[in-house]
Amino acid sequence: MPNKTSYQQLQPEERLAIASLRLQDVSIRAMARMLGRSPSTVSRELTRNSSPAGYASVPAEALSAARRSAGRRPAKLCLQSVCWRVVLTLLEWKWSPQQISGTLKRMYPTDPTQHVSHETIYTAIYAQPRGELRRQLIACLRHGHSTRMSRTRGTDRRGQIPDMVSIHVRPPEIEDRLLPGHWEGDFIKGAGNQSSVGVLVERTSRLVLLAKMEDATAASALAGFSAKLNSIAAPLRQTFTYDQGKEMSRHQELSAATGVRVYFCDPHSPWQRGTCENRGGPGNLDSRLGGIAGF
Image (cartoon, rainbow, N blue to C red; front, top):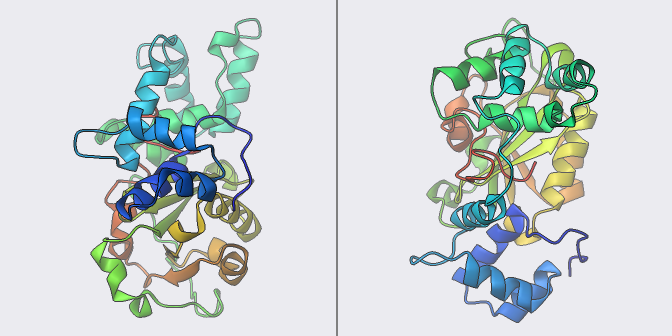
């Protein structure tokens, strides 16, 4: 049984578990035991965040977010704010979100309303609707390249990642997207290999989770992805499909730590992680975050 968590709000991965268990006609009390929550919490979630079509994790997250945001002050990084204009300018200069966050504190030392964390900056970038602005902002995080440069360009990658398991031996039922628990991953590096963020997209629900990384090393990828995957109920973390980026060189340790089977795409084949790539990078229907859940 999972340990009781210290926060009150249900997390995106918990809502994904509730939706899956609901489809299996699991009782509210059984759900509560599996999640380490009280039955009243699960019952209230189903009552308040179900739609006429039933309960689904992404719409439920959006309904909950909209309710929490009602009456709150406007977001610091709304498009009309001075703070957002400063962020845009510094991103164009290829500053990392961490650098921007620190600069805002120095620019406005006595005005906390102009202080934003680097997580907030990431969220604001990916909250943009698909379009030119969003592409430009993401390009700023990726060393200014308007399209994702191949990780393998000009490099012989043979032997860099030991014991890879090919996507071609991945169970075929994963392609059907009928059962949740199968994830695709991506890794975003900022300038100087800082501002690194791991991205996980669930193939069935399209739920997006972000994993904090200290840097762009394999050790950080192992720690970040392990922590985020282990926050998901075990039945909902079955497989993880990734490209051949060297940050995943410790994939065997990731599997041992999480119980998740890791599969690797062919080189230069982003379409094999179609759920992740088709979202133009991380994205979600969560209306509170505009695109990101669970950072």
